[in-house]
Length: 158
Image (cartoon, rainbow, N blue to C red; front, side, top):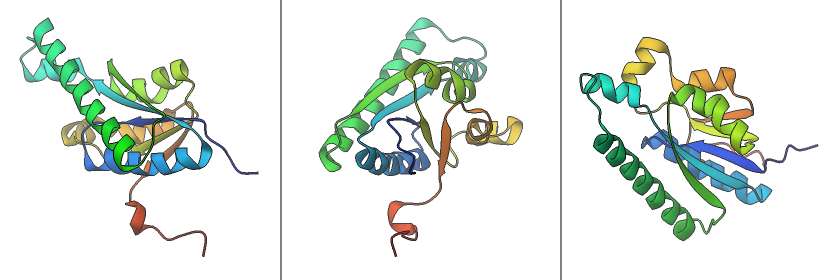
């Protein structure tokens, strides 16, 4: 029996790897008539360290606005280039690790997380481990870690 996924979470952080994960998620969603949730997480703790603890409402609002715009551009591309419509965007504040692995999937009933092998934050990877590694170990739903482009994999249909 083949696993059918109905609600796929794709965390987006602006990295090439996240965009690869979305490309593959769209193909999986098309085959399964599934829904995709795009999620961008704003880690205000990380930003407050960069600004010496001084992060105010205007900065948070601007960060949220920028994240929303980024996700809207991605959805437009998915609808135009991939003819895929069943996609929603979400912006959350908090720790990317726990929001992706536990909080968001519990709220939105995701049955698959498709995540890029690495993201943008090299410092966090070195100091405390990658978000992908954490999600892979602690996520509530299944996790698929995307490492290659669609045209770089060997077909299973041969």
